[in-house]
Length: 427
Image (cartoon, rainbow, N blue to C red):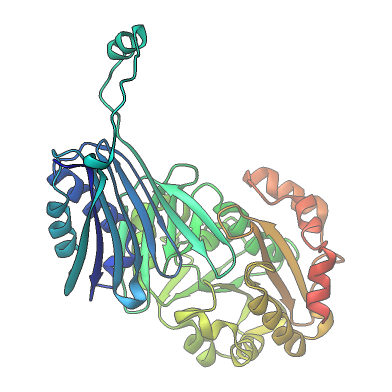
């Protein structure tokens, strides 16, 4: 061999855009490409960038294999660098071309460290060489695969164990469950974090117990979305609730949660629940006037099937379906991560319910981008979330139920908004 290493710069065109946006599949393919080429694998690190793109590297004893993908262009750039002559990088090239379903691949091979241009110098290690030799052990493979939820300016990354627990592409969206190191199993929809086992209680306890402990006479509840079951679980803590209707558009979310997120979905078989797989927007449009005491909008971000849940016409129908004195709570996005949607929803609700009947409140959820998340409490000339709030009843309930995030002090504190949020709402 006339050089220290072989460096192949690869471009794959016409690839499967679904595969190029799939971290576990890409990592598995890169590991297979290294192994079949004869490399000794040391570690792997892979990141997904929402909504499109994957970056990753497989470190091998003989150097590395690296990749970045552009699914929207069906294109991947791959870097194959091997030292010595024990590994054939062209084997990796052929494996990856097939794995990515590439229509065309091109590559340039460079010799790195040409020996005729180098002068070898002897390094005298003495006793250090013997000591190091005695300590030699086989390298231990480590794996670092990351899920990233991001927009154009910021991102949140969560490390998971690499292999997906669940993945299915429904007619509406791609539903995935990952097993993370820090937050347990995590549900993602279209590469956006929906909830995780460790911190979901902040979301579900706040969207449910704020209205339920403000308005003690709630008996009939409608939940739009919420297929993971967390909101239903919290509602079923109240014996006075007679009927909960949950309308979830995607049965895949429900099925995945039943199987892999039992701590959230534990109440989906409660006899008081009427679970309907259908379009929540159409359901509300056709529901009778004044048929619910509480309506919970437990939706994902305002894209795809949830986009219509952030519209003026939808919330007019929600207002119509509420009984006099009834309450609606909705997840209303992050004031930092999705400012436009946050402001638009506030502006939408105030003319419908009345400016004095719409109240924003906050919770802090580490697995959501920025950690700060908002909810909006809107009443139909009903209870005020602070003035009509029974603190003693709230504290007794939260302690008896062993709630993990919500308590009497959090209830009132959640409505104390930072100045910049007040300014956004009032603008």
